[in-house]
Image 1 (cartoon, rainbow, N blue to C red):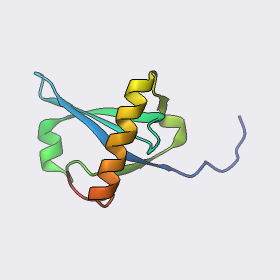
Image 2 (cartoon, helix red, strand yellow; image 1 turned 180 degrees about the vertical axis):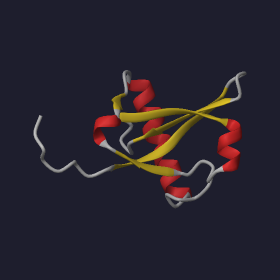
Image 3 (cartoon, rainbow, N blue to C red; image 1 turned 90 degrees about the vertical axis):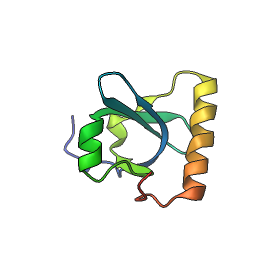
Length: 93
């Protein structure tokens, strides 16, 4: 592994938010083309105490996973575009 500079972060847009019975919120952020995503789970309580959920985040390219199927890629791309049109990256949503 080389010590070269880290690649620039990638802008991701919120495309999915799910709540479960354990009081966890699953957030999925995706690239505008819907090809890659980052998913995280967080307690609903912690989300309400902090800055909440923003319309976009920046993530390290190495932390992204490929979206597996075409239907999901299209849905993520559509939702990312909708978020980009309606919100600034730091907007709480």
